Length: 256
Image 1: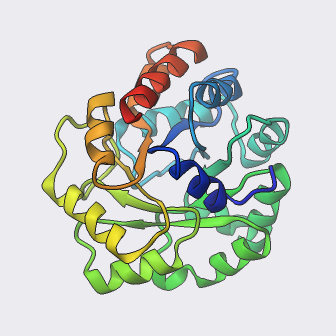
Image 2 (image 1 turned 180 degrees about the vertical axis):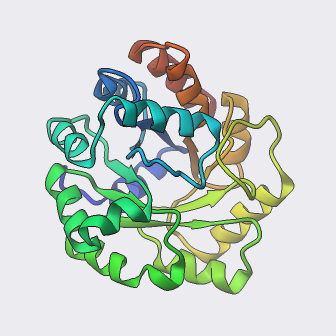
């Protein structure tokens, strides 16, 4: 796929709310079949987590998925080799941590991602003030570097994040780590509305999107959602790609 992540999502947004499901690479055998199941179920993009031993923004579910993947011998090189063979018709976005990126250098990491066909990158532990070099490397390789915004972020900083993010703006539903939650915090709704005032770039909520009903409620205040822990809990409990695809399809129906 040669279309940029942002261009693809803007086109999809014109016809409805956006849905980006997540899978930790290597968390189960045949994890690439999960990516295919997501795409077949109506995902607008797929976020692929590169497992890391100290995922500071991830809760217990994603941590467990990362631990399983690492114990199974999953590596960055191995993930990229498998991703290269994937052609699912929607953009694939890498999510990882700065340690894995800068082991190689931002330039080399971005080049490797682009070579494998990935269209976006999320590195949540690289602060805005230190993202310049990585952003430049991403632009050079045709990757969209997605930046995160939190409910506590001041409006002036939100404006800078919205201006510098590419692909979409990743809006956190709350402070803290990833994980399933039942409620939709008012602070999240407020963040979504504020970001929508600041940018025409897609705004997607993540962290704690736990059910189709909640996804639809959150999407009222933004352009769509990223779903991670709810899917990974099912995968860790033994769900097969088809079952995960069915859950994504239920999210798709709720958003539509």
